[in-house]
Amino acid sequence: MDVTLRRYPPAQMASPPYALSPSSISSFKECPLAFRFSYLDRLPEPSTVWTAKGTLVHLALQYLLDRPADDRTVDAALADLDRARVALATDPEFSSLELSDDERAGFDRDAEQLVRRYFDLEDPQQVHPIGLELRLEARVGGVRVRGVIDRLDLAEDGELVVSDYKTGRVPSELFEAKSLAGVHMYALMCEQTFGRRPARVQLLYLSKPEMIIATPSDQSCQGLARRTAALWSAIETACVRDDFRPHPSRLCDFCTFRPYCPAHGGDPQDAVELRGPGTMVEPMLPLG
Ligand code: SF4
Image (tube, rainbow, N blue to C red; front, side, top):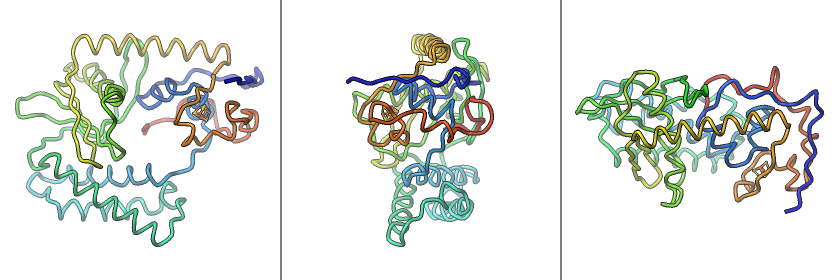
């Protein structure tokens, strides 16, 4: 594809972010230009039905797992979903959605189905969470990494387990390893923070429902640390050269920044005035 790259004026060159997160790492790997728009320029990203539904279901499950074990029933989970709905009603992520009555009904139906399906994956009364929405910052491969772990459990055998809820589609086997990259990073961050590596990391796909489980090993942790260091170096180079290239893929169909993307006839200069306030650093926690 013939893409003409126009650089930002030197005075507006990007600084490397304060820290990386599993989602910003994934963003840079998928498309350096989208990474720049999102994590360095902090362009506004409109809320979507899918992300809002994910936020709602995550909060409902957080409330549920925060209850005493015996109280974690389906009825309690549905009450927690109502509670989460009230808590988020005025949040811009929800108030900006402008759903019709039918769309709102569909949204609520889907959210309830995701919460009900959670119970097909595990019995929450048997789970021993020691951290919910746990915010961590650690050094991985010499790079500062931040993130929020949905749940850190103490398993019956005394081992730590990292769990991450997913409300999107289950990935094909081809993309399974890619989907697990975030939870492997969380495992490494736990090891740095608590001095113990979690024995298991698991993705709970509520839509199917299906659970994908992996075991972090010396090899996987060392590989992840090496790749994180290499990625940081690539980001620094991109900042120094002011060179964040678009990487067109099927994700372009869902990309908020498409109007400013030279791969689709746009001009990054048109986005300059939309940049977020303050310095061009990664947003503070919470990070997705
Ligand atoms: S439209 Fe595609 S190529 Fe352009 S910034 Fe978005 S993801 Fe990258």
